[in-house]
Amino acid sequence: MPGPCSYDRPRRIRRGAALTLFLASVLATGAATGTWSDRTQGAAERPAHDATAVGAHAPDAATADRAAVERAASEAVADGKSGAQAAADVVSRSGDRWSTIYSPGEFKDFQAQLDGAYVGVGLWVRQVPHGRIEVSRVQPGGPAARAGIAVGDRLRAVDGRPSRGAPVTDVVARLRGAASGGTRGPAAVGTPVTLDLQRGTRRWSATLHRTRLRSRNVVIDRPAGAHGPTRVKIAAFAKGTGAAVRRAVRRASPEGGMLLDLRGNTGGLVTEAVATASAFLDGGLVATYDVRGSQRALYARRGGNTRLPLVVLVDGGTMSAAELLSGALQDRGRALVVGSRTFGKGSVQMPSELPDGSVAELTVGHYRTPAGRNVDGAGLTPDVVVGSGAEKRARTVLSGLGGGA
Image (cartoon, rainbow, N blue to C red):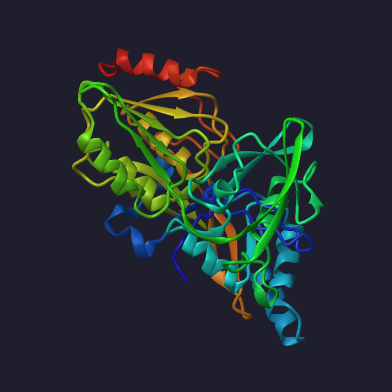
């Protein structure tokens, strides 16, 4: 198994409903993931030299005990029962909302999602007032786009099951379907899903067939003129995000600066968040975190552009690895942060394999910003707090830093 990890996303441990939250790139709004991996971090991670200075933080009281989870799974397997089910029951009783249990197929699928790939219909949803579920994003060229589904359409039901009042996570699980063999992973390529939709007074049904898609997690908008600001929107930190941002930084106008839009960013690979920070920093601390009392630190690589004017946009949907990045750039004085308070997800999970091949990821600690701020449960407060019109305000702030047009 990999080293210390943090799959940072809200979870519902409800085995009856068979739910797991996935990356935002897999149809979910408010789902997040952040992953630490000793295998992939290399020189970017070193033990913290002074645990007191970086602010050690003990795990929450509501934390599933690893030994208890593994013992329950082993006993269940010995009795011919589901080890994953027994482990999930222990996690649920612990009150730890961030820990969860994966089937082997689920964990494999989740790892594929970190590469930016998934099986689905190319549809993102969100919950709006009165419990209604609404389409928030449609992937160009995907099954949903080809069927004419548009942002703002109301999703009334999935395969005949009403969506109104259901948690977004339930709706996402229905959209993804159930893999063969009784696992909770996504359905296979080509399997159908029927959606009941509404646009204004028009109601209709559409049967879509799931396909393999690759999400576009980094969108770069370059100015029409030579000296305008470059806007980089990061939806999630999948593999390659840091390299894409570094390329955008190299091509950005020094006079125009950059808007780094992390609104609605639900997390991703922490290694990619650190790589993104490295595009703007010349080495130095990005974050510290603890794993069962062992303090560690993440450092940016040297050689980033420290002169490009930079403003970071955040909101209540900015979570996990996106908060780690925002906090690092804010604490290091590298960027001004504009928008509203972030979500507040800063706990660390570690995966371990159970006797039946399923995977338990359990909370083991928390991370802090370079200044020692604890993000978990608190979020980050922007330098400039603004609700509506945040991007316009951010461009004004950027022009005051010497960028913008």
